[in-house]
Each structure stands twice: as C-alpha cells, then as structure tokens.
Length: 259
Picture 1 (cartoon, helix red, strand yellow):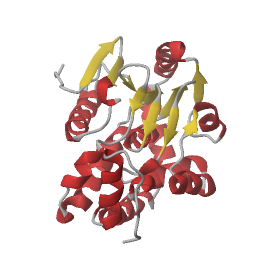
Picture 2 (cartoon, rainbow, N blue to C red):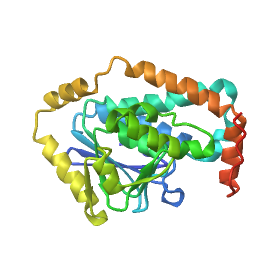
Picture 3 (cartoon, rainbow, N blue to C red):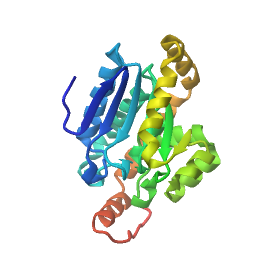
C-alpha cells in the first residue's frame, strides 16, 4: 500500500478508510492533498480487495476545511481553468469509481471539502458538522464541481442560497435539505460509517456499480463542469479575488470593487 504525506490509508476487511491527515490545518486541501487523493482513489479502484471506501478527516474538528487559500494568489491567468479542471477530475473519479464511497463528515466541510463530500456516494455527518461553500466571501466561486453537484442534491433555490450567502449549514439542516444522508453523535461517526459500509457490502458489487452509474448519469453534467471552470477562471483573475484572499489572510474585512 502506498505511503502518503497527507493521507492515512487503511484496508480492513474490504473497507478502505482514507483519512486526510493535516489536523493542524483543519485538513485543508493543497496541491499535495489533491495529488495524493487522486492516487489513492485510482489505487482503490484497481484493488479487488477493496469493496467500499470511507473518506474522512483526521481529528474531530474538520473533515476538510477547504482549500489552502494562499495558493490562489500563486495561480497564473493561463492556469486557472486547468486548476479547476484538475480538481473536478479527481472528484469525478470519486463519484464514478464504481465502488461506494462514504463521506464521514467530522466537523467542518467547507469549500473544496464539501465539494469532495458531495462527490461521494453517501454522506454521514457528525452532530458538530458544519458545511458550506464560502467562496463568494473571498471573491471566488466554487470550482471543483460544487455549483453543479449542490444544485442536484438540494435543488436550485437552496443551492443559490448556500452559494450566494457563503453561510455555513449545521448538520441537522444539511440532513433536512438532503445534503447528508444521516446525522449521528460525533463519537459514533466512525462506527456508523463502517456499519453502512458493511451493509452495502452485503449486496452484489456489480449491481452496486451499475446502479451508481445509472443514478449518476446526466448528459448535461459534463458541460456544466466545464462552464463552472470557465467562470472560476474569470474570478480567479479578478481584483476582487485578490482583495478577498488578502483580506482573509490578513484577518480583515474585504473591500470589493466588483472588478
């Protein structure tokens, strides 16, 4: 089994647990995490001993708190579209792996973290979970498929509210609107994810694969992802993005100019 700098990977009786292991950074995404997650998912798909994957974060404060914001400032105009497409590609592999992937959301799942959770087959949240897409508060938009998957999970109206306000949603509200499948006490999250994995493993793996493929089928989704990438490329080159990210890093309120 591969060794990773930012992930812990454990296979126990057909259940592969992938843990984003950056607890001091609230398991925030960076380039290394995305690269290693890509590799771990591809390997899980090839490994016949793996029947179900559980994806979670280290500690009890955060699943994945979002992107490493400072990396936005290093993006070149010509690479912004590719940045979005790369992240979408990894999440598309999660969604279309052909094996169930359960997100065990322990704490914050914000921005890219929620986008990862939404790409998973099913989502279980701890009672202390807080989810959201706060990108607009930084002068950015979701770019890893969030605008597309959120709309399909909760409907256009609620998706608009979550995306445009940037507000966090607590676990019970996330369950009410269909964003997560189940809410459990924090201490029971791991066991609940394992029990759900075992329940899925009782069913025919080929039937699960085909059923997931059928449910995920959407002839317009691919164009939606591309359109999201075009739009995030525009905002990543905006003055508002630079102001929003710098304000976040400097712990002050941003002064947006609409440019």
